[in-house]
Amino acid sequence: TFVDAARRLGGAPTEGEPVRCILRFFPLLEFQLVRYEGDEDFPPACNVLLSDNVLSLFSVEDATVAAETLVGAMAGKTPAAPGRKDAQ
Image (cartoon, rainbow, N blue to C red):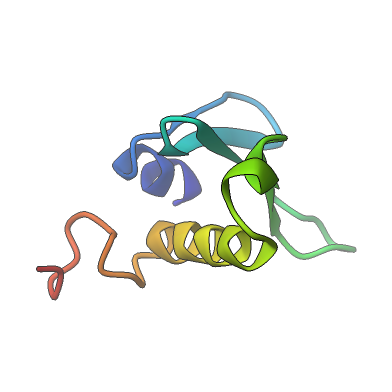
């Protein structure tokens, strides 16, 4: 689940709806994930919110890659995901 994946990566999910989780990418950079359950009109969705200082640390392309890497790790699809069988 979203909550389990967030905890596995060191995040602390909130209670309630939508579920939010703050994950530190680097000591000065936080990403906030917001998970919406969805309903009969809208499918489930997740937004990645970046710190206001992201562009002082990364280029736009680097910030995009960092967000994609985080989403992949949440899904267990990157080597950065703890517990992945093929992780080195």
